[in-house]
Every structure is written in structure tokens, then in C-alpha cells.
Length: 128
Image (tube, rainbow, N blue to C red; front, top):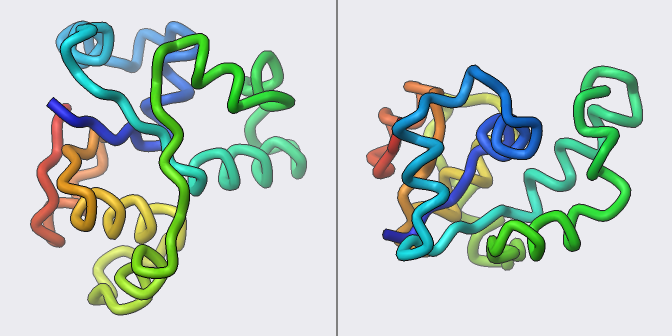
């Protein structure tokens, strides 16, 4: 399976948070799956950490690429087509980071790992 982690999913994975269901944790840990993290998530975490809204990421925010690599995850850059697709999405979801994740999941045929049920309105495959 090809999975794209939502920002909160990545944070909960990295911090071993109980909020991440055991079945989801098992799927992420399965080495048969390709796990992606979007540049949008790194952007979102960095902004929120800088303004004091996300202190929990302090242990890895300074070097997200290394954190991704150490987990065996794959960096997903943002391309022009992703930007256009995110901008063209219907207005169900107002969060620009989530809109980018939706666009990337659709464009790259990835299953989005998230507890955000609003994603379902866009027809993305979602795992939780």
C-alpha cells in the first residue's frame, strides 16, 4: 500500500502518542507499505512550531528530512500540478495544508492516513 501521512498522523507516530490507533500504527510500521510525508506537512509543522502552537515537534522539527529518512519514509515534494489541483478543489475543506494533502493523495494515488473525515468529501482513499 502507498500511504500519505496527514500531519497529525506523522506527529503522533513520531511522539508515540496514544491518539494513533494501534491498527494504524501497525499499518505504518509494515515494511511492505510505502509511507510518504508531504512537504506541506513539514511547512505546516514548522509554522505552527514557530508560533508556539506545536511544541510537541521540538525533538525533530529542526531536521524533518532526517526524521523522515530515519523512519524509512519517503519525502513527497509539492509540484505545480499539485498546487493547481489543490487550488481547484471544491471548498469543503478550508485548510490550505489539508487541501494540498488531498490533491497529492488524488494525483499520486495515495491512501491518506488521517482521522479527518472531511477528506472523504473529496473522494480520497482514507485509512484510520
